[in-house]
Length: 266
Image 1 (tube, rainbow, N blue to C red):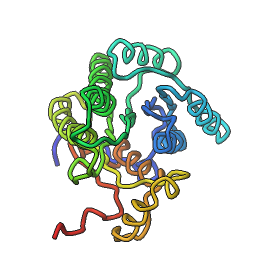
Image 2 (tube, one colour):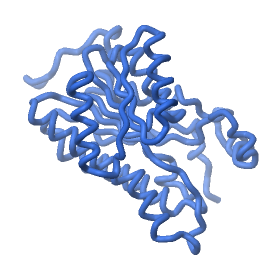
Image 3 (cartoon, helix red, strand yellow):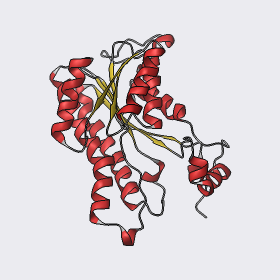
Image 4 (cartoon, rainbow, N blue to C red):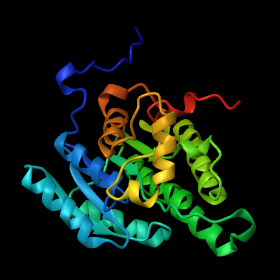
């Protein structure tokens, strides 16, 4: 055994985040809220970040508090470096220095390639990729200065490796998230910072079947496990990667899609 091998946690402690402050970006949305609630259940003091939807973020904080957990809602524009720094300052004042981060914030518009404007492209890349870089960089600088280990989980997408029409900007940004994850893992590992990605498939939210019945039907027919994903499916993957259960895992992409990518292309 290596002389520097860490103490192996008890099974009962593997998925615990007690003592950690965890930032979940975009936690006013369905997936982010699910991650925030699960992390609070695991014992973390959760920072529920929101961009525009303060009421939804505060509802998630209230649900966490009602279940006996700790959380605070904080807003910021994650595409602006100074706003990211202000968010982390507020985190430290309200809860302490975060040592767990889930980069979940993003946007999901559609646009045909031939009609996509420069503004369309820039907005989607900024929301889905630039934000990941800015928050990862800012938080990592702080935990390195404090000589603390940390875990970062980036929410990518199966569209990082699977063609989706009308999504040139989104798919390109999510592919960038996967590669940013790998580079960050390589550069930050020596500081005790693990960086991994979760790539979800189609995740259920209220009204999805009405908004996109064709897509829901096609996905359900194609997925080996026979159903759409739930926010809890993504949340549990994030909890695993953020926890001591994944203590020797970094630079990985965990696909959470019910097996839909096992389909052959011809």
